[in-house]
Image 1: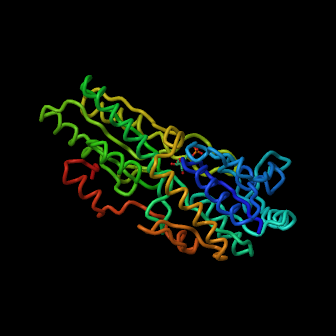
Image 2 (image 1 turned 135 degrees about the vertical axis):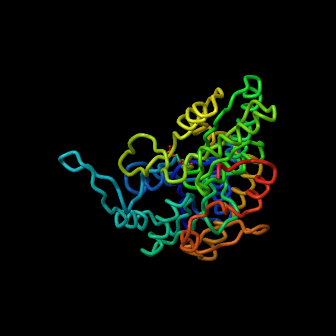
Image 3 (image 1 turned 120 degrees about the vertical axis):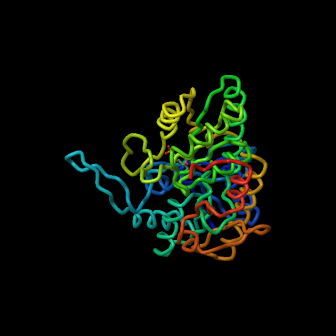
Length: 359
Ligand code: F6P
């Protein structure tokens, strides 16, 4: 058996722990392991394919990033190509990828990625590729799994930021707006905001009204709490408004969300006359060492992915369904994206402890 591992989409802490666990589990079965560099670039002749030995994966479980590198602009079904007039067209390079896979004698692929990479995996599976998925994303927006690896680390980073912002906000009687990632889901904002005891949490699943946000800040002010912390998900938006986006996207890249914090802070300052500051936490949430929780989950996912290959569970994805790691069809995970349920107990507890969602 010769398997190949690929990491695609935005990186997340824990990728290296999955690679290590999958590689060692496979090598210990006597299989050969290859690593496809930068998503599928290595299989399309734009990057290399490496042989993974125990030495290659030694001492990497605690490291952020991915030794295989990654890209969020590598969809083989919609590959951006420049026309002679400079405009961009999208072409399907999946035949070439499958051909190269066969030429290399690759029997199966383990793909580690979020919804975009899992969608590519499903399409490759439908084209006859033996493929198994591992759900990765700091956003925690993949259905069918209690959590994805990378999420816990991102939440911990955001909590650390909230803790630090609390002290400076309090010293200066300021309102500080912290923007966290999450794309169309509010899990990072919700979990970090509740654990970090923010005063206002704004998430895409609960559109907000600026008046309600300011009311909360002013009621704290009247109660002698002169500072407030607002945690806003990058995908949050006001009732009747739209999400903020950042600049132009590159060919093959999806729309970049973000930039809501600054305008929100200005609006709060104008309305409340309180001094406001804003901060975008950005890619700090994606970097650095995975937490112990993410490291263990990633390692369990890596081992389970190899067991799925051994059992020929093609087109399936490993998933955490506490307390077990199970396999579910990738198509099932993709059927509906996971979003914060506004009636979930975390939201309920947040409200009951005085946190406003601006609604
Ligand atoms: O999906 C993970 C994520 O970090 C999102 O939370 C964020 O919107 C996006 O990726 C940022 O992507 P990039 O690294 O391309 O800026």
